[in-house]
Length: 132
Image 1 (cartoon, rainbow, N blue to C red):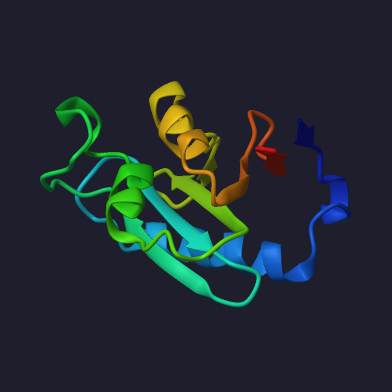
Image 2: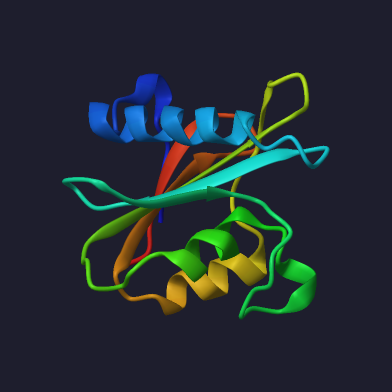
């Protein structure tokens, strides 16, 4: 289920702030033509964040540049009720659609602690997708 957030009415302020932090983190990714970052957060704190990087991953080799995998490799699954934030920017820092690819979505959905994903849709609106 996707919740459209026209004027952000369906997202709480904290979720908007965390998505903006994810976009800020993406700005530090200087290695690729698309700047991408992901953050996993509980209702009380940011659990983990990272941007796409060339690193050895336990996931399929061709997908190791995705920030979703970088975060899934790093965070501790002992925390429940998590929200996953994904942001992508062009080199000129303009927003891009940031819904995770089908491979990343499968890995995220396999993680039962993650309850929702926040990203930009094709119209660049910030949306929250429930995984429950």
